[in-house]
Length: 541
Image (cartoon, rainbow, N blue to C red; front, top):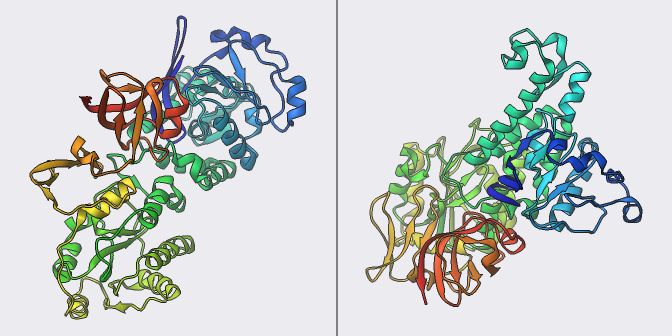
């Protein structure tokens, strides 16, 4: 049996058990001792480039371990071990690496443990785990030992230049035992990655570790192009900082998802006037000194939209939700060509879809130029109000004068957030946000509809709140009353939009419940093990 415990995109932690064997994954072990059949599995190491006819003729299956191949159509059973022999030959071939892993992962059940034999080195293990592998052996590091190679997380080096120099003070180095050092280095790196998965910041670590080789960088970037595959298992929100420290961060699935939801789901509460403002280092923006000045100048006379990298456009209503309220970037004042292209395209599409009566741009420098070019492509006329610096007295005076004559309108923060989170333009008339930070609720006629999660910014519906959201984020369960969290076997069907961490409404013949998804929709319907929904409240029908 294999059960996934924590998900971070395709990477995960889990527990595998068979008889007296229990493995907490990801891990490296002497796999032949745990699975003795590995010593006698003839005709299982078919080259990855081989076609389907070759596989049909030569590829053999055995009882304990399922041998997967990109060209084979057979499916593993839920809970089994899936081995991909020869996967080390895919690492120098990034395009096929990504293509093959997606083909195989899409075919086999999500609750299978994936074994990559003779592959794992401290320098590449982060990429292997991020690709969805769970089990590894010591073959690759032992081979490096026989070649006199010293392994660590940065790469592989001649042992004579490293052993005894103080680079490492592990037990192997203290004993002058290269084999022990290399094994410890692999185990140590896996432990670091488990910590990253549990904390939700594996991506930042992966961006750094992929720089060990051009092939690993290529694999990272090619995976980012496969947005549909990566995004469906990427948590919707995390209660931590998102660090956008490299050029590759702009292609992170959660960053792409935020932008797509702003373009495809989000409904602005007003379209008479918009003002585009710069971001701030402090999050949420409204807590910063600069944005307090902007807000006191705008005084609800226009819809406030923040331009930022890597998220492009953040309407004021969304400033507290992940990742808008959680990201941090190195500030240089320079916008590279990829940022300009991606952000400019989002600005163009947003203002093509949402036609405002007046558009004011309170930006300067490269940011103003990006917006100017994007708005020109939409045929939108804009008034630019920033002088040298957006917070200068002259700039704020220009903005105030430009907005003079426009009516003040009370801002509807709820409508935009609900449309972004649930993909539905909900009737929010009569809804109000009450309470201080830490205990904010959304009420209507003194009845609580939602609470606001302080760590992620997501809205958590009550049973009455779900009544305002029609047929969205529903998990259909079998004929039972939940006595705790809902397991995957109890799920009959679910909304395909559900992602890990989403708020969901559970519906069955005997009870309804509200809670948070522990799996994405794809995993819920294809798994037979693991927690599907962490239940908050249950109501019998």
